[in-house]
Image 1 (cartoon, rainbow, N blue to C red):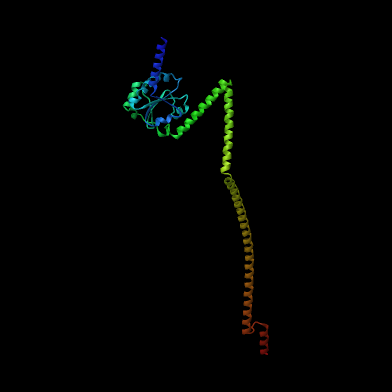
Image 2 (spheres, rainbow, N blue to C red; image 1 turned 90 degrees about the vertical axis):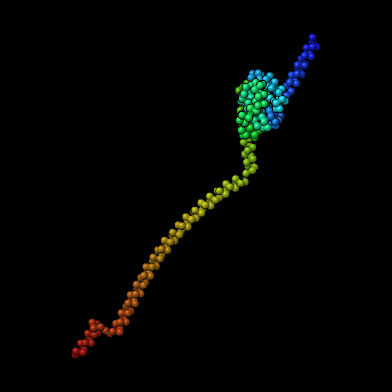
Length: 290
């Protein structure tokens, strides 16, 4: 009986392998294969009860892939955390329909016949595709995928520290806090160094020029104030001198006018002769009477 049992076990194993052959295993390295052609892809985790319940149905559906002209695959999010971030998988299992790089999330009944009708009757055309900014092939989702990989790596390090080395959880958190501070300080120093390398002279020159220009403006203002004060003082002195000179000129003109008037009077008296009221005229008249 033993050879017969061994034969039956090997036959069933080969049948299972042949049956599961159409089911493609996708991971971080080959996930971009789904960008070409038509695909139905399941995201699952081995610890998920709903995923374990869907597994035989999904394997059976994969056997129809050649008849439907599509490819059926599945992704283990525990071994490919970057893909769970790239596709924004928030619940398990999650199923996507992909047609030439256009992604649509399947939200129907998890049944083989429903999967077949969804593809065969093209019900996926009624589902709104994922927008371009959220597309798994976009740059921003690639960045999100990198963060998910980093978080999974830190989680594995935390598990290794606590389980293998026997360090308590608070000690692991303390180590992570110190590592974060050190890494932040190093990145800050590197950033400052790069800034000094690329923009050292320009910033220094601009600051020195600004200080010099401010000093020059201040000196110019002081000089303008001094010039105004000196000009005002000179103007006052000039006004005083001009006023005194005018007074002297007026006085000189007045004296000249008086002298001219006196000279004219003398000339007139010389031409007319002595007046009757003068003492000489009186004397002469008395002499005639005699």
